Image 1 (cartoon, rainbow, N blue to C red):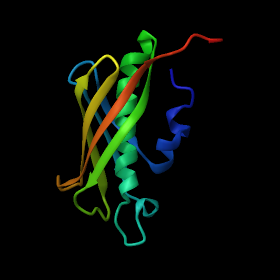
Image 2: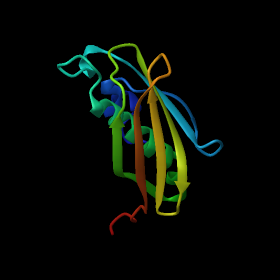
Image 3: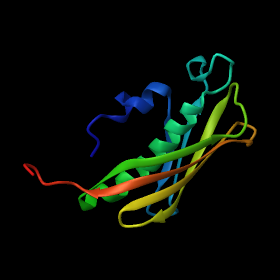
Image 4: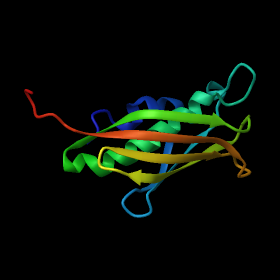
Length: 137
């Protein structure tokens, strides 16, 4: 169960909207961000950190909701995000797919596309799965 409601956490501050999550079924989570001036670099295109942040959240959140009920925690381990094309406006659409669900680490591939369907960024995110220590240990 989340400690901070989604509408008050970091991701809400930059405008990530979760569109759909089917982690147990097809292993996919989708999100989007409507581009605002606050997302842009001084040169006028979406900052790479926006792509990386959304990728991290979709992967970590997807893993967490699958493992927390079994007494585990999910923590971002690595995030390799590559910007492919500049985005100036519109909406960025994200699709995160689980590549591996190992017992101690999940691996995700996340694609970001603009409204025209052009690939804008690609991320590979690994999420550590760890046992939650008992209280007082």
